[in-house]
Length: 230
Image (cartoon, rainbow, N blue to C red; front, side, top):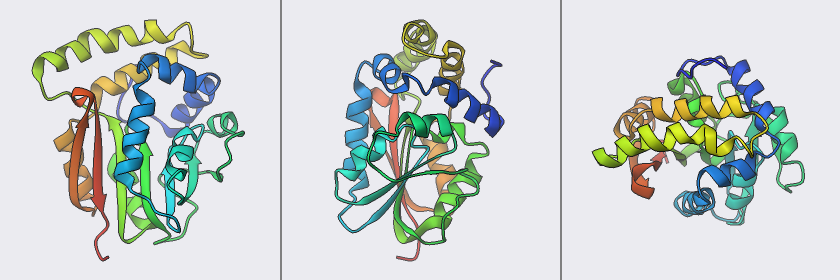
């Protein structure tokens, strides 16, 4: 697999995720030392969904995040463009739809909240994906993005780039069904925007009240925003 860039072909990305669907959740837990579960819980709290609300979980993969967010009592829809990932989560009892993040098969103003968990960096161009999320969100509705980030403290950032991300393909190799894909994922994590840049992109796409919260020394960040008009 070629070096990761921020302009990857969507079909290449979908094929890659089809290839890692088997064992994907287990590998994620290994490479994050179990922090993935904690990050999903914190995302659910920030999402603050309520019974009667409709939530779109975009780039949901095997729907493990959708199940977490549905604990709130909201109706949560898992959407992903990788059929392999959706099939991998077939046993999870939440509604699912195959969907392209840039052309969602969903009506305007149909969701109270949209969330993306570790999937935004695979959507290029990112501003177009953020604008499509805005389209399907009700006025006053919420956006919550949980994504890898750039640690603000320089020594931590150096360790993250030069030690953690270099070790990632080696650590995941025994557990992954597609080892080259994790080299791509490590590079996409290294190349991703910092928190301030992503916040600006979200604002430029039409969202307002954009803010972020660093998690785990800034290795991951939650970004939250609101669609105007509520």
